[in-house]
Every structure is written in structure tokens, then in C-alpha cells.
Length: 249
Length: 256
Ligand SMILES: N[C@@H](CCC(=O)N[C@@H](CS)C(=O)NCC(=O)O)C(=O)O
Ligand SMILES: N[C@@H](CCC(=O)N[C@@H](CS)C(=O)NCC(=O)O)C(=O)O
Image 1 (cartoon, rainbow over the protein chains, first blue to last red):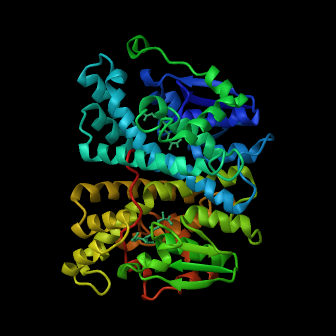
Image 2 (image 1 turned 45 degrees about the horizontal axis):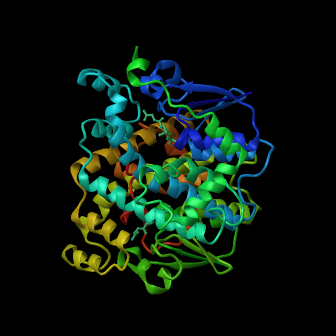
Image 3 (image 1 turned 180 degrees about the horizontal axis):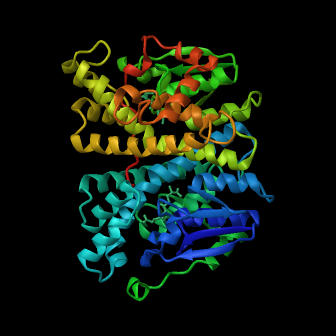
């Protein structure tokens, strides 16, 4: 029996694990949490994931956290098409890409993204309500990042550094995809799954970075991704959750 | 053919040296004096643009990043496995490795740099000569890492490093209270990942890590240190105690 706790809309950490399950053809029970209503900070969920983060996978009663490690677990534990290259050199390369996407590109994008959308997330809550919610964020680093975004106190130099890294990453990704249909070697892998979930939206959000002039191969890769049945399924199951105002009542 | 470019057998270099020794692989050890900026020598920059150690060359291809380098070794050379045979155990190893890469390594390195690095001068350089040497580093990321380290870490940064180390130590002690090793039923790459940072802590944070405060973690540390492979790895350095020297380490994760 497999259950997955995740946020909608499906993307980033939730999206990659969701997509890995779909690619492997694993049947699972959806346990959606409404992030805007801070359901992931409720005691019932903290008992499952003490950091109060999604995704969490439950398999035969055992708890699995951390998206990158969960994706490798899914590939290890279930039948279905392999999501990692067989060759040890290519596996090394895949893991480095996954880390780069998660920790360098992904964190830079999250910093930019959260600073933009935090007002919508907070909605009409008062400062006291927000402070109370922040106190409930168990992970100290996450709490600090949220507080800075909420107070719009992320230092401009850090935001600029993130912009610089996203632009540099885009070039690196374009170069990789210019020589090959998939990020690592000639086969689809977890690196494509991660990149799609953390980065494909940049084409819509920041067309000055991802566009048909600067990054034609990246756009072609997004097109190839969207033709995959599992990605179609992922997109079909993606929803925008209720607004914070509606959710908080 | 395996050539390993490494610094003192602490931190990331320690992880890879231990893995090679545990697996009983024949390799040639190439010492890179990180405090003399040898990692940025042209012949090393040809192998990796960033100029980083540890760096392994196997059949003409270069490998970096201790976590993936160790997994590569275990997958390419299956005898004497260091990854558990079951999927759950491998997941556990990867979660520990990620915790090291996401903050434990950077936090221990920051505290160690504060204690053993900058203030005492770096390698053969007096503190004043450091800044000039840093500006000669030919890689931008490296220059930035060293500039920040040479300028000295702020109190806020050190406080965060201490609290991250404290969180990690709590988890390590909790795990070792109910189990002999960090992941699965046997010694694994999780122990290999944590040990070369943890070993700094009894000296660096005696209030946090000691026989009284963390008895299980302390006996685990001694058990790991007593392994013949670990002893061979620790003998690959040039200083008497590799846990009393430090270099600016990996970057902290930039968004919590
Ligand atoms: N290290 C975790 C991070 C997961 C994570 O950051 N998830 C986000 C959603 S994409 C979350 O749970 N945010 C809730 C919060 O920060 O309060 C992983 O890789 O799975
Ligand atoms: N992400 C790398 C980090 C390697 C690392 O921390 N290297 C340190 C010494 S062990 C270093 O070379 N620092 C000095 C520099 O980068 O110039 C890994 O995990 O292998």
C-alpha cells in the first residue's frame, strides 16, 4: 500500500515524486495537503513528517521523506521502467544534476518565487496571525526563510545572486540539451523528472531567460516531456488549490 | 586505474579516502594542499572547472562530490558493499548523505575554520598575505568562498552553524541510541559520510559532544575510528591530527 502527501499545484518537490510514481505505474492513494491553509503544520501531519514539509511517501506503513531520496527509493523498490541509467558514470552524472537542480537552481528559484508570492499566500491574515504560523514551522532554516520573505527582508544582494544563478543554470541546461534529448546520456531519467518540476515553469514566469531564441533546445525538451503519458497525467491531475481566504475558514 | 586527489583525511576528502580503503581498492593518492590553493592548479582545473577536491580520476574520467563519488565507487566496484542490499536501507543512507551535504558539512566546516583556520594564518601564509593570495584564485566561486572566509565569519553565521550542528548531533545520538550504525543493519556510506565531520566535534563543541552528553555517538565514533580501513585513510594526511585543521568548506544551502 502506497500513500503520498503532497501540495497542489503539482510541481517542485511534490511534483517530482508524483511524476516518478506515475512513470513507474505505481498505484497510490493521494493525501493532498492544503499548503495555503497550513495543513502541513498540523499535529497529525507533524507526526508523519516532523519537519512539516511535503512530500512524504508511506509504503507498507513505513515513512519516507526527502524528494531526491524518495525518487531513488521508488526506482529501487517498484517494478516498471528504470528511471536511472545503468552505467555507473551516468548515474554519478544524474545524481549531480539532481543535486544541482534541488540545491542550487531549485533554492534560487524558491527564494525568488516565495518573495513574489508570499503576499498571496498570507492573504488577509494579520501580522500576529502570521507570526503565530511562523512559530509553528519546525525547521529553523525554513522559518527564517519564510520570515524574511514575509517581511520582504531577503537582502537584495541575495535575490540578485539567485537571479544570476538561474541565468547561469539556464545556459548550462541548454548546453546539456543541445547535445542530447535528455539531461543525462540518451535516456530519460530522474534528472529530467526533477528539472521538469523545478524549472519548466521558468519558460512562463521568466520568458527573458527561457525562450526560443536563447534556449531552443530547452523548449524542445519541455515539448518532449509534455508528450510523455505520465507527464500528461501529472498535468491533468494538477489543480490550483482554493485561495487562502477560502482555505483559512 | 584510480587516482584520488585529496586534502587532509577530514571532511569530504576523508569520506572518499575511507570508502576507497573500506572497499580495498588499489588507488594512487595525490595530496593537494588546499591551504596553498593547489586545487586551483591548471592541471586540476582541466579535470574539474571548479577546482575542487576530493576528485577521483577513473579511466580518464573525473568524479567530484563525495556523496556521488562514494556511490559511484560502490556501484562500479561491487565487492565489499557499503550500501545496504535493501531499498529502505539505501534510502536511509541517502537521507544521511543529504543531511551532510545540505548543512552539516558546511556548519562543521565553518566552526572549524573559525577555530583552526583564519585566525592562525593559512598554511604558510600570515593572515595579511591571505587576501592577496585569494585574489589570485582563478575560479570565481572559489574566490568568493575564500574571500568570505578570509574576512571572518560573522557572529550570526556562527550561531546558525552551531544550532545546525546541535540539531544534527541530536539526530545522530537518537539514532545511535537504538542502533549500532546510522543506517540499516550494518556499517555503510552513512557512517562514512558523517564520521569525518563528527570527529571534529568533541574538541570543537565540547559542551555538545562528549561522553556525558552523547555517549552513544561517542562510542560509535570510536568504533568507526578503530576500523583498519579508517586508520589507513587517516594516515594519508600530513598533519598529526587532521581534525585540528580546516579549510573553507562547501556552501550552506541558500534557502531553508
Ligand atoms: N528537503 C525536502 C524539502 C521539501 C520542501 O521544501 N517542500 C515544500 C513544498 S515544495 C514544503 O513542504 N513547504 C512547506 C513549508 O515550508 O512550510 C525535500 O527535498 O523533499
Ligand atoms: N561538495 C564537495 C565539497 C568538497 C569540499 O568541501 N572541499 C574542501 C576541502 S575538503 C575544499 O576544497 N575547500 C577549499 C576550496 O574549495 O577552495 C564534496 O562534497 O565533495
